[in-house]
Length: 438
Image (tube, rainbow, N blue to C red):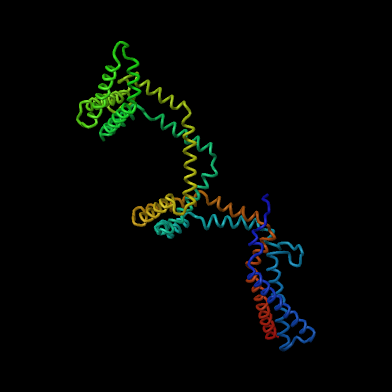
């Protein structure tokens, strides 16, 4: 059996204005009933039931009957009249669960039918409203802020180890899918097509020339130390100077001449390396991979990739990526003018504009919304009805009665007043018929 829980403080305390209205209408109804009691007692004490006094007594007597009957009926809804445990009284507190089940069935069978839901959703034109709302830059900025805050909050509650493990697994799968030989061949081909290999070659030549010139003394000392003992040092120094100057002159000549033959040799060697890498790739598109190429090169490349995966760099990289991403997300989410919020707002506004300007897309969005609403109504209307039933069954019975009395009581007190008045008029009418029949 479900536990009984109190209503919310707002429901328990109710609306002060309605509470005052309930007190006022109760006083009016009770005061009118008291007035009829006084009139009836006065008529009885006078002892005369003919003429005008007879009509007064008959009206007062019928008013008492009508007023008391309606008082009993109204009171019996919320509590036992006079505290007496009369059967079928205190209806709301004692039959609250049955009311909940009935209301749940009513919601399920009458309000959540697929046809009704689909019609209401279609008439609501939700897609058009969403498009117009999103197209407003202010609304898009507000929603972008909510999304950024949600992403930041989500990043703060997830387990770091789980996220890092997912990133590591993704990196490992990505690296494992990469074919280094084919990737290297494509990279070299792109670099050569753009001429970057010649720029790199020039940088290498300039660096070599600078190194030789900067370490001229060290190189000369090494040369002299390894020269024959019988050759004079002056001759060795002259030989070294000519060799070094000749090398520097050659390097400068190659750098200055874009058509130097050595550059062509570099192109030839790199093109040969590209072909070798392509034919060493297991799944080269031209069909030259797999069993072709250099088995030794293919084995060395595969071994290098396996060693890279086995060295434990990926877990460190995954942890670093996640830390950087989380820190960046926190910074971007906290800054109202951040690039993240700006891009999100722009994307949302553009999406709203496109949705509103494209009738076909708008129609598809409406169909999607209708389909989702219909699916929910068809498959979950029972669960929604049970939610109503369960929620009401968990309310406290007495507090529910007080809340409903606060909500409906003023109107019900007017029923008491009407019952007293109608009863009195009925009594007068019956007495008039009685007089006519005598």
